[in-house]
Length: 282
Image (cartoon, rainbow, N blue to C red; front, side):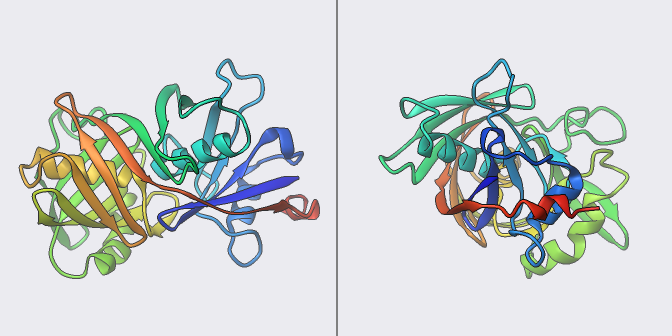
């Protein structure tokens, strides 16, 4: 049972290729594998290429709590790098299937250390996010979560996000307010949360509370959503450099709100998982 680990801006993930892995990938097995004390340790699992799928580079992405996510920007870059490293692609441009969506990939250098993704279209419509209440664009609208009231911009980029521009210690805000916002009744599918600050017209910094993962150093879809919110509210214009605790990614947004995300990715290790590890999970 071979296993591969990569990191993208400190967001570390395992790649499990069904062709090299015999064990069942149950939610309990995912939690154990991602556990940093009793497993390998990771922020998530990229599973693919999916056997028997009509697309040769289809994947699924799992959060460390065992839940499945619709999309992961860093996970897609990591899976794109794995495909490059292991001969699944013949050139620097290809695509990946995830959650009924094709994501275009461009490898930017000979080592595949920088990869650009066509992330799809941003939507601020409440029905797309999804979010409760009347149909509307959720841009800079007031919302109360527990004792605090914020101005939020909610956006979907294949998965849901809630962006809040704030002052103060953004990391502390993400850790303390993030859990309540993630699970708020306003968001029936839960949501990712970003606390953001504008540096200049082309630069923001964010701290992230990720749905199903908690506080995380970086997130590609979070960077896309936060940059989109900054442009939508007139704070920034494309391209936007998004600085996160794990490093920076570049987000380009066209006139139709389609996003190109470019950032680094690196291999960490590969090895053989002990057969007993997933098999000991209750």
